Image 1 (cartoon, rainbow, N blue to C red):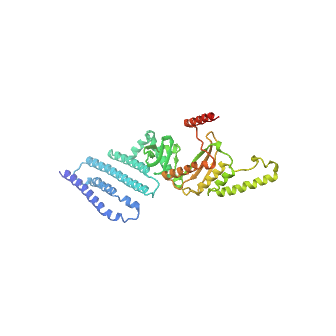
Image 2: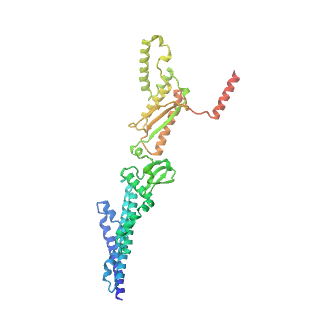
Image 3: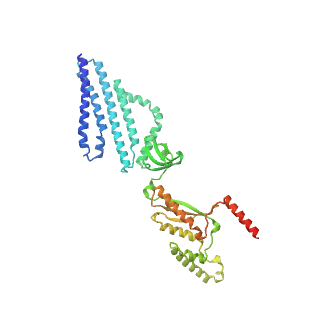
Length: 408
């Protein structure tokens, strides 16, 4: 009866102290937590962590007070003490896991507020795994009343099996450390990895996987280790630069390329952005032609020996002037219209510029307006866009041929 009463008193004392400690922590700590200047202190004093601290008290009371129970056999006292120590190890492990969870939530809050750029989720997951493994070893060693070193020596013989079982986890953790330490990838980055069909924003970086929300709102899950073994494109540099590149050709029909007449030059001189180019170019051409006529008067009558303005060269100059005057393009970045090698699709004129925004909708609107204008103004220079003939084009050509035959 004394033994039973002692055990009952010990259990009641343990849980009474747990309630007292819990109430004290939850009542006192929140009063001064908000006044703490250090953010990490407020994180460590979270209510969930305080509750986990109170849960350690019962097992501590039992393992320290079991010796005071009268007439309790030595074997029973040892078993109860070992079980209490095992429970204490479990509660300490849960406390450490709660601390790591709180750190992870604080980091995610900073990510949302754009005050931090690196996710600690993979480190937290690995830390929780290691804590639970160590706690498991301590609990088993305590319950069988053996030294933890004996279990660790036994695990050494199983290292090859563990390396095989946790191969992906080890590779992923190593890759996660390299990604974070070298600042290669962050949550929120635009990632493009064609090997796995990923093209979107990184929404989660865990120990084993990285989740990407594609632009069609599907989710692609990538093993973390693949981000170090395979190549991928990170568009963060584009976002940070503040300018997104336009790189698109405008294919011009080569058969429409020719020299400009005087009347056309006079008409094109009325275009404000093109007038400075025409004035300087005409002066340069006139000086060259006069010099050539002086040196070779007998050959000055041949038009091929004199320099003239071409419609495609003038149009290219207009494109450059138009891009320079465009209010939505970055002037501190590369800005040009360049002639590319002619192909069976015509003579490409590539527009290479950077918008002053990286937002997708605004970027597409700016790009569309630029090419709409440059395409619509082509006839003013006597140029045509190259287009593969369609069935309708064939029918129109046949009808024109029939009309011409009837007229003849």
